[in-house]
Length: 102
Image (tube, rainbow, N blue to C red):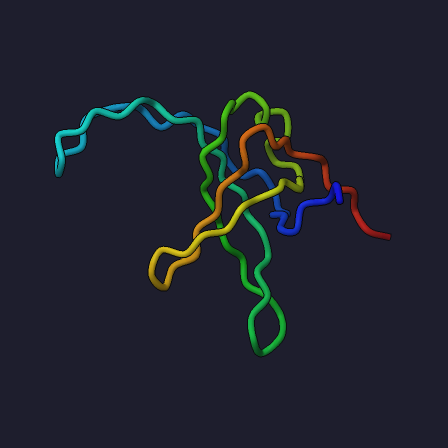
């Protein structure tokens, strides 16, 4: 099996570096982190869909900059934080252009 079970599809809305700093709550120092924001359609129970913006950590922001404003597909892992679902891009995973369906 070469295809991932979960993928995220959408438009690369923004690619940026979150500056490093010190947590005001814990005093812990954290490094800068590369991020990508992907805008996509999420199905809703009654039919149709809503737009949602997902922000993900990435290994290298430059990998995603070439797709700014374009639709991509990228493998993701999924985890739960209480009632909230979180996503991550597995190490080494790369985005692929999403070709429009006919």
